[in-house]
Image (cartoon, rainbow, N blue to C red; front, side):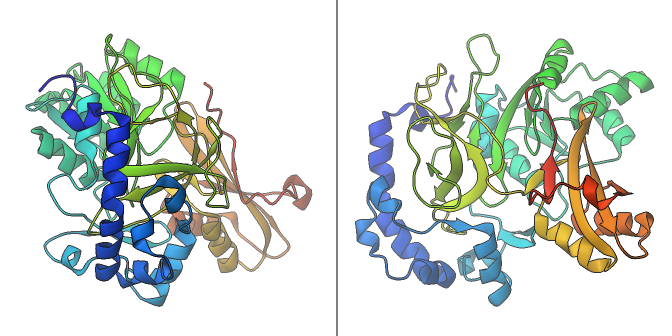
Length: 415
């Protein structure tokens, strides 16, 4: 294999566009036949006419709240999953909750291209520190790594000392996981006198890779690449290596996806270079999502990538179109904050504040309470609802701005 995984990555953009929209009408028809929820969502549209971007933009954008309503009305999948995906596979639960099946084939989330673009090759040992618990993160990279020909160690999350011992023994070249956990491992290895210098490459997701942290990894001999992924769609876009081995600007859109940037709260595509919500149509026959709104903000880069891949590039993650916020690799939704408030009637108002402590995410729930509320009880609810640890502080009502924010992300993404 050369610089690219296959010829699809370097095909003329017009040929890719033509192939996608030639295939889309038949895909929509077949997907609607196997997924009655999708058929209901797209009822009234003539699929034969959806053969270009302008026509695609007429379809409604499906966002997480609507999908959750479908699933609540017709559990567990709301009619958006092909029956064949319910045998010999896996099902996952993402925050919301949202139920998601694993797709068909050896690399159902399209992770192989992201790994290859970062320099990973067959025979490399991959230390996979994404979670294998309930959510698909661990399996996403596990399947992609094995499809590429890697030997994968399914480390999962936590048990840092054991992970360090395993990495010292296996001598993996590649790390995959959240951006900050590799630092946790490297720092702990130094404390224990363990040698983790075998790590040369990393593919990270599930959180922000701050420039300072990327530079620290580079100084420690690890070249780190990012991929933009969701549990619903898999790898949407990924960084690629330049001639010097360092990441090129932006992220190349994965093959087999149609990506649009729309004005938040609408389905209207924005102009060139404008920031908007990332909306994705996949050709997954197992879990057909058409114009699925990710809630993430980004913009297109018009210039082709220096790596030779011809698909469009995203500028990267540029915030949230809503207030759902990714913390330590997990999304926290305003509805979850509302659930915590509901559990403690004495709370008048609440605001979840997300910050950085060193290179790690922290969260603190600020509450004003007119009744008898114990911070430790609310802290237990915070962990139970979000599955993440955080602190709780009782403050005066005037300390919580009346600006409509339930979740305030105060991390500085420029450092």
